[in-house]
Image (cartoon, rainbow over the protein chains, first blue to last red):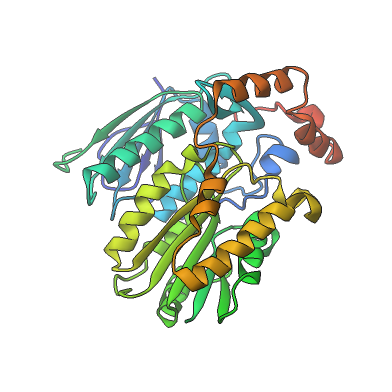
Length: 152
Length: 212
């Protein structure tokens, strides 16, 4: 099984490909839509090419996310934004919800592990819903787990 | 009362957020400044925010929350904003405003944490094409944005009727989905995307999977 680890804290898990967000600054999405309209499927920025290759060819991608004041870091958020290359611009409707069509036939299962710092249960629940929506939009599914003891 | 409009779009002056901002600004008569997250270091922008009594952040929805560069600003802001009004305006491509639910919860909690006064979070769906449409087709939207600005200035809150109008539909009705699916089957939904790809000589490569 091919695995990718996106590490935003000291998560001690082995993987075939590791993106360490503590060491690598992700260039933010430009919102240019070039990945839809000019160079389909390819981002104009080049810093994530190796990650994209690993991502689309993986069976599972584990995101270890450090929560700070109810949300992930700006760096981790830029990584999510840059996943736009995985979608086509065309919009379909599934379960009465808008969703971009899939560019790839199959994307890896996502696992979100996070160290929580939520002010309320409502904030944590909203965060879960957002992660599930991201997986739905990428035409895959996800597992979400809190690392409350900081043991992983 | 000094108001700051923050443009949270990575596209800066070239995107829909800027169009929203310029039209909100038209309705305001007191001092209004505009700053761009894509033009300043987050720490520098954060340091300047204490000069204002009211801060409106206008941004596109990226993957169901704020763009990464907006989060980079939020994470360096201190929590000494007692008395400062904060409002958030999110514009998105999908019709249903439900897509931005996370931000409503998040921005409310964020404003509480920094001790600001929360004006609310407004979500305007179906906005991706605003910058491609002639002004005549956007007249209603521009008037709403201008009224939003003027009402905010006098009442210190968002106009409830405009909030309601922007946020409809919250969810897509089954009838609307049936209609959209019909338009999809006859190719109408994809027309503008295909036209733009053809203009860029990219249509033949539209389904490419370069990272396999």
